[in-house]
Image (tube, rainbow over all chains, first blue to last red; front, side, top):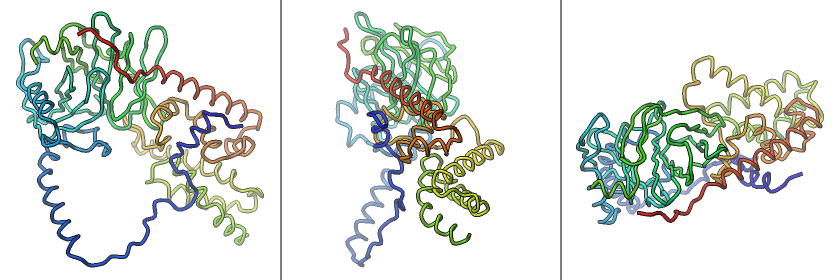
Amino acid sequence: MRDDVVTRLAAANPVPCDGPLHLPAPVRMRYSWRPVVGLVTAVAALAAAGVAIAAGLGAFNGLSDTQHPQTGPGVLDPHTAAMIKNGCGLEPNPNGNGSVEIHCILDSARLLGQVPGYGNVYVLSDTQGDLCIRFERGVGHCGAPLSRSQPVVTFGANETGSDPVSFGIVMNGITAVSFQAGDQEVTVPVKDNVWYYAGENSAINDMTIHFANGSSQLLHNDAPTSTTVPTTTTAPPTRTIQSSPAAQSSSGH
Amino acid sequence: MTQRFEQIYAEHREAVRAYVRRRAPDAVVDDVVSETFLVCLRKIGGVPAEPLPWLFAVARKTLANERRKQTRVGHDHDLPVDEPGPVGDGVLAAAFNALSERDREVLRLVAWEGLSLADAATVLGCSSVACRVRYHRAKSRLASQLAAAASFRPEPKEVTR
């Protein structure tokens, strides 16, 4: 009766056994100063990190997945830290010409995942409490934190001589995104809040997001987009920036 | 009567609880399990000799009632309630979650509860033949979703920069 698909599904059972689950085994406690010293050290470390965590809380709304440990300048290598810092200096003004100054809080930087061709994806807060997304190679974007009305930030790149690519950051609870690619609809899984698709596609304009419970929501971006000049649009529910590593480097970020 | 109920409860309590946990957030699991066995106690005379599929069917209806109740009191905001999905396999989870609830349920019953199609039909309240058709169609759709997800290319392309 079963075949590979169902066997694979059976292996992914979220409650794999019928017996009592997650019952902690009784632990015999023995009094010792060592755990107390360890606890004090841990509390001190947490307090030091607390400021950075607090700074990132609002900006990281919807990105609270604990499987992505927070990182800081001490963890970032100097090159990456410098790249993030430089990228956070000026941002194209979403409301007009020129640039706006962005002050990123480097201590809040957290590795989110990876995008092929663009390297690691970092999220961090700025002094305005906004969410900044920075890629190891190429584009970045700062804007309002993710929310239920704006659950996705989508990036698109269309480079000469290669297929267009789209990728993006989504809120927790979104497991996949769908959009038109040519004459068919494709569904791309979300990993570590990040998705990526290479090939001609419509993700920059229209997208369906799929939630863990099987429901879905259609998102449409009404704002005009460009494939040559980095632009940021904030039209809800999808916020979009289109750029490429080449455009990024030539624009001086 | 009471003795039979106690026996059913002792033998199937954890299975019913696991069934509910696979479909609902932790916050409602206890309520749904309690309500399921309350129905079982009230209808103990009509409970079949093999009670588990029947219990799953009751739990399924109770869960549906619970969801309707949540909707009535305004809990159906933009984001859905937390419903457990496949774990440890992101591609499968995305493909599974893209299916309709109807497809997901028949696949869950076979893959996660380990029911035969005849028992799954009891839970779903349909004939064995209908359940078999439903199962095979759901399986095909899951396979199609997995094939579509395979178009995701994880490796960077050669680009001109």
